Image 1 (cartoon, rainbow, N blue to C red):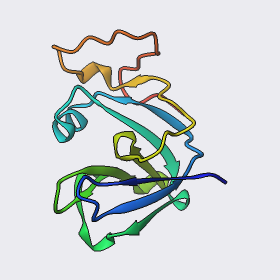
Image 2 (cartoon, rainbow, N blue to C red; image 1 turned 135 degrees about the vertical axis):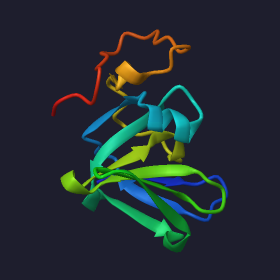
Image 3 (tube, one colour; image 1 turned 90 degrees about the vertical axis):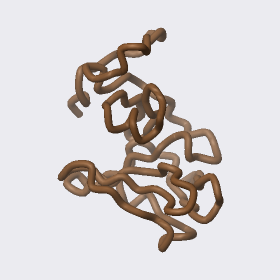
Image 4 (cartoon, rainbow, N blue to C red; image 1 turned 90 degrees about the horizontal axis):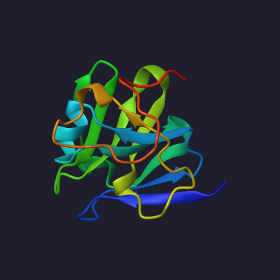
Length: 134
């Protein structure tokens, strides 16, 4: 199984993930926009047992966004790295934190009902008002 790595900007946190993402897409929810400072965030979903922090576990801060979503970021540089989804045992890896290209590229736009009004989606990927059903 091919592994790919990721890290924060300052290098204090590193992680490894199997290149077996189940789904990938651009999230346009207001929380992803605010935490990234951008129009949205590219994420890949992977079962938690295919993801591991390999360096700097003690430098990761967690923020409970909702009951179903915990944002994980570096306490030093503020890099958003991944989100934990405990109820479904998944991790949403921020593709921007990856050091290597994943095989599965984003497949859709999610939460477009709350996308920034100033941003126009200009590709042909499917768009979902919320998170698409499995």
